[in-house]
Image (cartoon, rainbow, N blue to C red):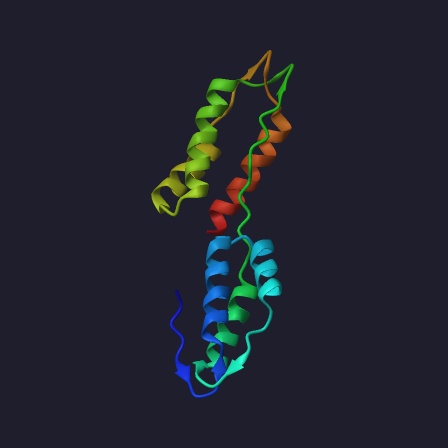
Length: 144
């Protein structure tokens, strides 16, 4: 929870606490964050409440936060595509790095993306979709 100072005339503490809890529950999903802010609305001014400038500053930061976009692999099987076993192994490494915060796993995933040449099989994952996923995951890993 954020720590806001209590002042003589400020935002209603219960409303702000509910807003902070809703934003934290959204876990970085900007659509859910904006929906929570709209649903709760602007906090009321009360006799003893949270410092409005602090709450407004926090809200501005939450609204301006860069959305977290986690790519999801499309594992559609086609007639000629990437062999499933090797692709699943690579996707497991990349998926763990994308979901986590460990810089070593991120570096390992970036190295795996750059250094792995997936073999093509008679029945395998759609190459275009897997390549698009890996490109998106690579951009996300480099940006973090």
